[in-house]
Image (cartoon, rainbow over all chains, first blue to last red; front, side):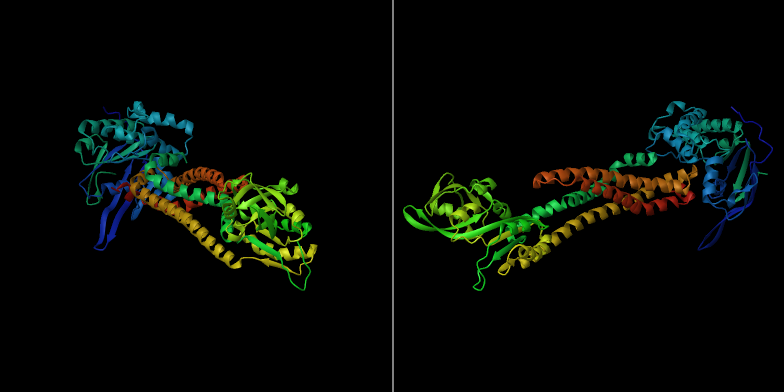
Length: 233
Length: 385
C-alpha cells in the first residue's frame, strides 16, 4: 500500500554546510562534511549508508539532540541551531517525533503512560490526553493495547507504540533511527506502512536504515558515505 | 508529582531501606523531644533516689550562741512556692522510750508529714504509708523501717500490730521500703503533728527537705531558700546543704547519655540523607536512557530536575510520615511506661519540624543527583547501554 501524497513545494527544513567534527587526542574526526539538503512536508526520505558514515549523527543533529560544529539548519526562517537548551526542548516536543532502533519504551509503564509523557511536557490538559493517545494508537492499529504493560508487548508492537508516541504531539517531522532494525521483515514493513500513512498527512519523515527494501519504500533515498550526503537537493 | 510518586511506588523495594532509616531517625527525634522533659524528670527522680542530688537539706543547727529555732509553717509554705520546688517535707528526728516486751527500749522516731514519702521516693513494702488525713487528724499510727520491723517482729508483715511509745499505743500500719540510710531503716515514722503533740519536749522540727523538679532547678532553689527563710523567720542558724559534687557527676553522666542518644539519631538521619543521595545517583545512572528518551520527547532540563527532585522529596516525605506515625506510637508507649502524658502541642511542633526537616533532607540530598540528570546530554543518554 502506498498512501503517500505529493510533497509540498515549500521546504520544511533547509540545511546548509552542516559539519560535525570530533576532536580527540589523535586529532579531528570529520563525521559530517558540508551537508546540504532540504526536505518538504509529506516527504519520506531514507538515508542509507554503512556504519560510521555519519547518518545517525546527522539525524541527531536534525533532532537537536546533538550540536553541529558549523552550518545552518533553517526551519522556516529560524536557524534552530541557535536556539538555547529550553527552546530546543520546546522545538523537539512541538515539531519533532523520534523513533529509535531499540524500541525504546519506558519500562514499568504501560502504553498509555508512555504516550502521555510528551503530552505532559507539552502541558496538554489531562482531560484531553486520553483522546490524543487513542488517536495516535489507532494510527498504528494498537487502540486495543491502551493499558497494556510495555514489558508484555512483542517487539513489533513495541516499535509501533514508539511510532504512536512520536505522533502523539502531532509533529511535522519524524526522525527514525533504524526503526525496523530489530524487527522481522513482516513487522518492519508494517511499521513502514504506518510511516506511509503518516507521510500522507503532510508529516515529513527521515528514516535512517541499512535495509534497501525499507529504503525503497521512501520517496527519496540518499546514500551517505564518510560524512558526505548525496542525492538530496 | 504524579509521575514521581508513581516511580517511587514502582521502585519501592529499592527505596525501602532508605525510607526505614529516615523513619527511625524521625521517630527517635519525635520521641526524644516530646518525651524528653518527662523522661528527664523521671530520670531525675531515679537519680535523686540514688544520689539525692535534687534534694536540698535545710537544717536549723543547734549553736550555743543562738536560741533553738524551728521552721515556721509559713516559711515551709513559702519555700514550697519557690519555682522549681517539686515537694518539701518537714522532718523532726528524736529518740523516744517505749515499752517492748516489758523492757524499756529507745526507738529512733521520725516525725514526718505526708510529703516525706514522695520526697524520698519511698513505697510501702507491706501495709501502707500514712496520708495527709492521718497527719491532719494527728493519728497515732506508725510506719516501720524494714530493719526495725525485722528486729522487732521477725517479719515484714506487721500491719495491725501495736507499739507503745511514751505510754501511748501506736498502731503499726505498714513497713516502708527504699530507705538507703541504715539508721532511718532502723527507725519508725509517725505523723509530724502527732510527733509535735506527743514528743514536743525532745522533738526538734529543724529539718526541711526540699526536692527540686530537675537538677537544673537545684542551684536556683538553693539560692532562694535562705532569702525566703529570712523573709519569714530568723535564718541565723540555717544550713543549706546540696550534694554539689554528686550533682555535677550526675549532670555529666546525663549530658553524655543525652549527647550519644542525639548523636545516634543524627547519625541515622545523616545516613538516611546519604542513602537518598546514593540511591538517587544510582537511579539517575540506571535511568540514563529514560532521561535521554524523555528529553527526546521534549522534556526540558527543569522537567527532569523536577521529576528527580520530587522523587527524592517523596522518599523523604513518605519516610517522615512513617517516622511521625512510629514516633507517635513510641511516645504513647513511653508515656504509658513512665506514666506521663506529654503536651500535645509539643508533639505537633515536632511533627512540623520533622516534615520540614524531611523536605530539607529531600531537597539537600536529591538536588545534586537531580541536577546531574537534568544536565545530561541527550545524545549520550539515548545511546547509553
